[in-house]
Length: 370
Ligand SMILES: CC(=O)SCCNC(=O)CCNC(=O)[C@H](O)C(C)(C)COP(=O)(O)OP(=O)(O)OC[C@H]1O[C@@H](n2cnc3c(N)ncnc32)[C@H](O)[C@@H]1OP(=O)(O)O
Ligand SMILES: O=C([O-])CC(=O)C(=O)O
Image (tube, rainbow, N blue to C red; front, top):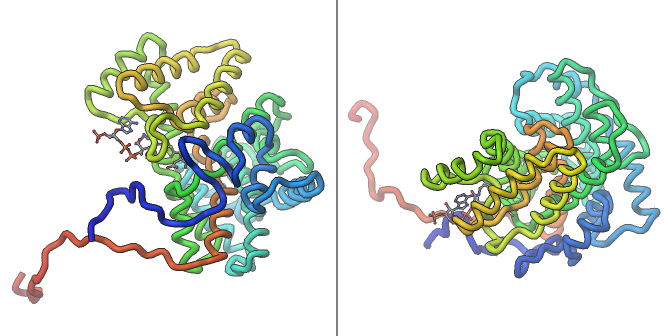
């Protein structure tokens, strides 16, 4: 038995949800470029869950459910109030999603119908939880979700308490479409491993959130912002990147296990970052990002991934950097739960082998003789 480090190149599941072939990402066979251009997030989530684009009335029904389910149990809001104000936002989300299961009597019902409904419920509640914690830690009261608005609109509204700018709503929505699913990425794999033991959907999503949190995966978007802030001004980009490369440090937001010639999502986020910078009348952040992109691409041959330009996009939308990865989780929730449903359709426990590298034939030494 020979282990493949990081399972690179191992095909560990069959899936009809999303595909990456020749650098092209498609959800249920539809190119991500078309979805980014034309679809809203709710439509995308429906596509991932049900395997087809919704009709107008199906989309309306989903929208109504998302509105109805958006409020979270009062007890949970009370819990958020006692969490440390400086707690890691992904740790808060991981804990809160795990706690949501305690208030759902059907948490352990693994029938398709019930899990599909819980997926929609979780999709509706994640934005409410994140926005509530973001306000509570600033000493403000959480804002109840609006009915009859899109998920992106509601999230921005619940964060600020003000009607969001339609440009901001569209930008966030497009970012959510782009992040919604990505074949067998680490957090999705983790959700599938958890549900494959016939655990429950809340456990699967909790595992996935814990996995997304890491800076080699979803946590990279926050790390990108930290780097852009450290660079600070355009003239500092080159010496900063040079220093990092000389010290063999990672440049966050670059490289990918699957894409070696560029992540097809990055160009959309780059375009969005440029448009928002121009609208804001200050292109500093965008200019620094472009400079870093050029340096890392030319000197290291690494291309930006989905996390690189999303950092400037979210910052230009006025969102604090420690909400970037929770926003990624809002989007990936549809992908995770679509994979959980798919795993359960034809389940087998996921249990690979390990190549043993420790000592053999050791003797047990009684404790007094050690
Ligand atoms: C949503 C997402 O999860 S997208 C990814 C988000 N993560 C990041 O942006 C973090 C930075 N990037 C990375 O750490 C990696 O590129 C990963 C985790 C995305 C992929 O990891 P792997 O597939 O194991 O990397 P890969 O085998 O292609 O790396 C090849 C070489 O490039 C180097 N490399 C890869 N990414 C980077 C980077 N961002 N900065 C500097 N060097 C890098 C590796 O250290 C390795 O060098 P070596 O051969 O001298 O050891
Ligand atoms: O697929 C991966 O390894 C990481 C990624 O880009 C994602 O999850 O969107």
